[in-house]
Length: 361
Image (cartoon, rainbow, N blue to C red; front, side, top):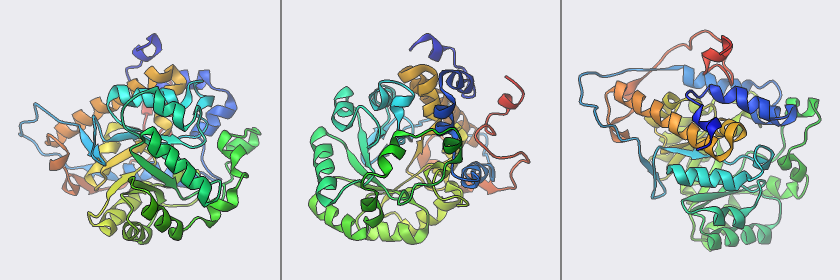
């Protein structure tokens, strides 16, 4: 691990180094959201609205933080979610992310708009990798990407389905910053808009690879996904970067869990910045969670080693939270360990999980 990563003792310490290393445009791309950024703030508010109910006098000397997704063992139930334009934060882009995930012991998801591309990232390291596609072409184009992903050894294929229209991300527009994803959005975007459950049926019949649908925001669509043979229902609002005034992702999770009814595995992302956030999502029924902005900060701050440090710090917080709740593993955790409470009064946002930042540390 490099010197910059070794210096990171707290998650909030990522911010200063990452901000220094990134241009204004790249920084706002990473931390920004759509229009009024209300959905983004609700992601954090949703986590703040749950309090823990700890149990005591239990033997928690050994706490197992490991989990599994699609049969793949994960050191912690945290997957590195797809981020477009990773190459803007580190020249090795998706390859650095995949290596960090593999080295730590978890999985990564490669965005189809991140370099160095599908095959190069697959060749960068072993370990479970998932390929995520924005539909920018016809059925033959999609099937070509799926064939390539299968041949390259990806363990699952993910369709992101909440990007039919590209939201107005005003931080980017104000600085005239155009991300890689935005540059490609106009290329074949009609195909994304026309992509439907009929296409999923065709793909399900043709390909024997686990399928993930990312962008589920209602029980209704979660139920439909299971009916169409989806293996992982991924509750997400794109980190608040798409539809403004949506619900917080954690607010959506319980109804998705109920609708799925154990017929598929469940992921969620949106607002996860601390180990306690991971624990709350798992208590409410997630199989695993995704992080995006948080590991993006690690990548910007210290490259591949910075991502590894993010995962290590999350693991420390997760283990401590589980132990103080009185459980030794995920199988013992459920919603009984949570209680709905009004959030502590402070504006929810990207830095609200890190109060020391507000005090100048």
